[in-house]
Amino acid sequence: MRAARPLVFALLPLLASCQVFHQQSDSATSIPIRLQGELSVKAGQLLFSPCQEQRQLSISNDGSTSLARDAAELLKDGPDPLFADLQGRPAASPTAGSDGQLSLTQVYRVQREGHDCDDPNFKRLTLRAGGHEPDWSVSVSAKGLLLERSGQESLALPYVEEQLPEGRFNLTSEANGERLELWVAPQRCVDGMSGAVQHLAAELRLNGKVQRGCAYFGGLRSN
Image 1 (cartoon, rainbow, N blue to C red):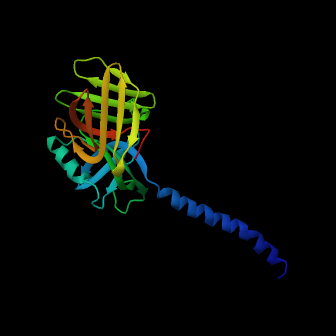
Image 2 (cartoon, one colour):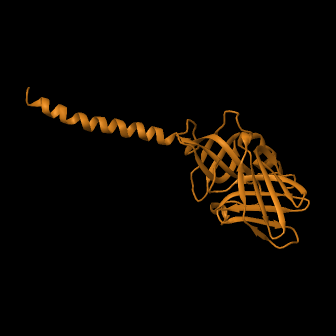
Image 3 (tube, one colour):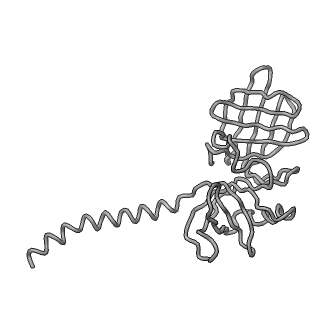
């Protein structure tokens, strides 16, 4: 019996390492991830297919987001899949007919038209904002800020970002004779033209003129 004891003690480090690996794996799966893809409804269940993937994830929503209501409103115009930009915790699905489950932690945007899985600039951006009457958009990256307006040439500007309380922030720029301020706040925002829903409200102040719109974080920023 004495010969068996060294073997038992030799196995203890191995068993301990297996336990540590298992705990780390469980912890890793609880980290929210950001995904873009197609959103559809089947038998009353929201299903999400990430870009360039075949799997379908059922959406688990505890009521903390308005995704189900927003999707139902957008799908009134037709049954085609929507585009959604979501953050959530992936897990095994308790229901049949899906390849897993996504427990939502954040909805960045949901829309019927516009930028989707084929958007080449998404991964380079920290923020995109835009509005209408007249049409305008602001794209922000590590290289600077690009202002685009209907009927006018695009304007590239440097900017300074200031963090404000309650998750708000503003971007300011003074160059080429332009005074630009973009104020952004974490607030559900609906585009009046397309019906798209985004997670940020935006206000563009350009040379004293105020224009309102919506915004969302690009691929380089999640909060």
